[in-house]
Structure formats: structure tokens, C-alpha cells
Length: 331
Image 1 (cartoon, rainbow, N blue to C red):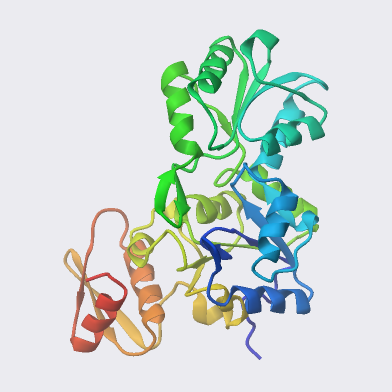
Image 2 (cartoon, one colour):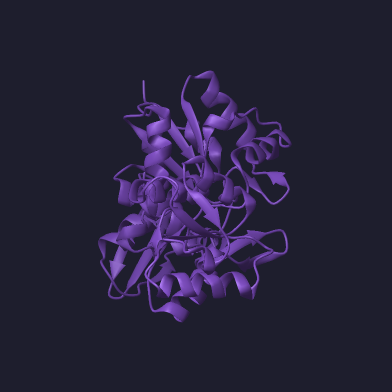
């Protein structure tokens, strides 16, 4: 019997915004898919670059969607940032916090001393997104980093998806501080490994699977960690982004949503497809065939990625293929 994608994995790491939920609503299929993972005894870890909320608040937020999660199932970039600091600093070292109270609490939890001013002589700076940050917060951090303080950024997401659209993320504010200091931070969140490594360790997993909607964080993190990944089309990255993805941001599988976890893994793999074919014709790739549009997307990705770097035009051999490209917004 063919194996579903979840088979062979003892833990599934789930991104949150754009994967499990979108704004104030659960993503399509999320509740049933995650419930089935629990019923099958597969460990679930919610892995988020959001450093502004404590794990308990994440659990409460998920409960609002009908998801019964535990604090131990949540891994945040605030936790990962604090862990990076704890590995490098002596106990009770002063850390200037540029971020939310949740980040301050995580710094304190690992035995370090959170401060908010350069006058307190911090030996490190940790930065996470917080809507109430002011110029003064960045000025204090700038002085500390320029004085030689270790700088850790919880994540480098340039944008933050919201119900109003994309807003500045922590990465945009990291760029502000980078411009003012000519320094680069250590990054704890996706796509860097500390956050994912922490989640895998907490599950005691030997064969994890990463699932997310963003190529530049979720999928790139999986590639760096050497684990397979599933991209879902419920969030930020689009079919066009996937076709044009660089090697460092290419998932092993793609599905419409989290229900793909319980579909046949071979069917979701980005590879040549039995019902679709892609022919190279000079600088173009020509699609022909029939069937599921996501199968066509997998075939196009496989052919495009095999073609190497550089732009490749996509075109259709017939009306059926043309309609599929249009549906995927690849025409």
C-alpha cells in the first residue's frame, strides 16, 4: 500500500500564519489535518517566527480556532533567540531587549538579565518585532551594538502578513539597525537553524517534516536543516514563486493545504508527472497533458529547476494546458 506523506515522519513542524491560519480564520483543511496527525500519534510542533507572543498566548490563539494545543508544542523565535544568547553568555549577563514583554520574559527564563538602556551596560542585544517600539529603543540598541555587544535577531522576516495586507516585519527593522551600525546580527528564527533545531529536539524526532507557506523562511529553513518539506498554497508564496525558486528555497512536496499531509507522498512530490509533460523549446517550457492543476505545477517545477538558473518562459501546447496555466497564474 502506498504511503501518505505523514508516514515515515515522527514529527511535523507547522508554520502558523499562512499555514495553520490566515488572519482570524483557520486555513482550509487545517483543523481536520492536524486532528488526524494527533490521532495517528505523530508529534506536532507549531514553529513561529513571531517573537511578540509567549507560547501560552499562541496556545490560546489556536484554541480560538478549535485546535487543542499544549505549550510544549509551541516553539517561538523569542525562545530560540534567548537560547542562542544563553549558549554564548554567562549567567545573569545583561541583555538589551528591543522587543515585546514576551521576549523579555524568555531572556529572563534562560537566566539572563533583561535591560532596556545602554547605560545598564548590556553585553548583548536581542531584537524581535513589537508594535510599540520607538526611536529610543533603536537608539539604545545602536549604541550597544556599536560598543561591541552581541546582536541576536529573533527573525529576519521583512514583511508581516495581516488581514490588512503585508506590513513591515522584524527584518525591516533589523535593516534599520544594520544601516546604523554596519553590523550583522545572528538570526535565531527561520530560515536559520536554531528555531527548527529546538522544535525537533523538543519532539525527540529523528525524521521531521517541515510545512509552511513561505519559501524564504519555512522552506529555506528546512533546506538548511536537511529535512524534507511541504509547501502549502494558503499563504504568502505563490505558484510563480515556486516555479522560480532558487535551490536554497525548494520544497520536496507541494499541496493546496494541510490536507496534503494525508495524501500519497509520491503524488505530492515535485517530479515528472504521468498526466502532464513539459517540453523544453529554446528559452521556453511548453506544458501539455491533462488532470490536476497541482500535478501540472509539480511537473513545471521539476522541469524549470532542471533547466538551471535564468528566466524561462512558460507556455501552453493547447487550450487545456492554457487554462491550467491561467488558473495557477502562470500565464
